[in-house]
Length: 291
Length: 182
Image (tube, rainbow over all chains, first blue to last red; front, side):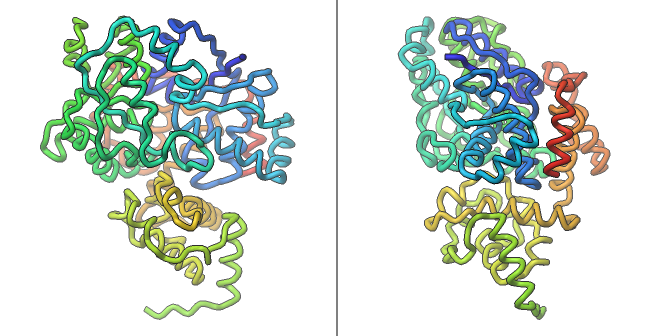
């Protein structure tokens, strides 16, 4: 099966750790993906917030390039990108008038026959849990890990068609495969404030603070995510949240691909774990990685 | 305050919203579940269910100038939980889009609106987001030059801030998309 890869803007910038670790583990798993040639930004929350048609047309260009290139499946590791690609695909399937307008504008055909996967769907559906389990060379026993899903992987369920929108478990199952212990807590799918990080930082810190303090209260050593925006709010803003609420958090936030990579026995430096704002030294020490 | 709404104007507004929404406002029976689960309800001037009812009543100026429509982060919790399957999240998109088209600048939440605009400008000129340029232009526009600047040195040290952006080669196609749909 030909697998297309849509990195999106964050993975080429502030969340480069996600791409580095993702490509590393796919290499180990012997899975070949090809970046969609000349891909463009999906428009993210900005497009759908103020211009609906633009929010369908921008992702549609990427989908049409992939489909016309003979790809059967698209991996979009960023939760927001996968959400926008799936939303565009859904509308193009259900709104013939808009579809015609968009394909005419792009001067490209689109039949909506590819499967579009977020990172967790790709890992469990395309690669498979058995194959992942067989690669675990260094079980992360003793490590308590909280999986934070956020909004866009699971909502809206009508379009995402992935896991339970109120109590998703896919990432927890992947955590369990690594030998680590999944931690249950209350804020798995509560919003981190997402795109308003720059425009409403106080609101974002309140929401993200609720999530981080709840995870802390439930005894986790670290958090795993599958979304660059969630990562940015939970990791980059963490020190500021500690200062604002005058209470230490100290929770490293890793991408799920990094946690899997560690369990595969990959060197933390090759997974770009030192790229995070909250150092993961204590966690690495706990699993016997001397840094 | 007494608000008098012309029935014809009310109908026009309702039909504009409903045609963009592909849903009926009357579906909502005001149970308030959307507002109970909304993560940003504490900052809003009107709760999501109030926005739906006010739209149905034709209170166009009030909803288009509300803080609520710009504070909504589209987390989709409301739509997911709505017992009537009403597109609560989508109505916020629709109202923002109408406000944007009418040139209404949010008085209190103009920074959220500006962020979306600067973001799309960045997509239009590069095809992709160049984060440093996006943040710089947003800061100039909002004049919050120093907010969050303390994060920059460490982000730079960690390799999170790229100094150069990339332009895609199909920029003419992006320009056409914007021309056709903006």
